[in-house]
Length: 109
Image 1: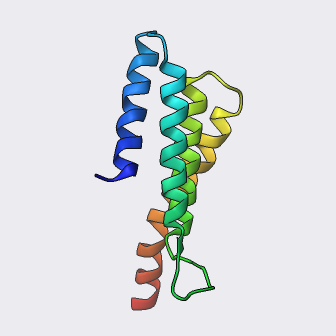
Image 2: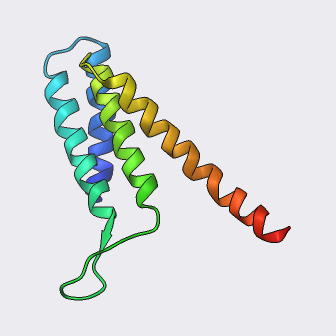
């Protein structure tokens, strides 16, 4: 079983607990979001050789997804800075999805 899937399931359960005002919701949300963020940040790097680490191409998307997850946790926990994290993360996600079609259209003309 994948650790990232367990973290995402924990995040969903923690948000459910937080919505229903059940005890332990904050701990579940924070712990599972840390698991998701750590596993997503490990996706940024691949090891082609014994001593080198290269940044993969979808690094912009993974970084913005980390910002969206963190902003969502901040929003659920009512911490300051949630709106800015969500704004930046979702804007970069949208930009990442818009750039490849724009590049392919520019090369065909």
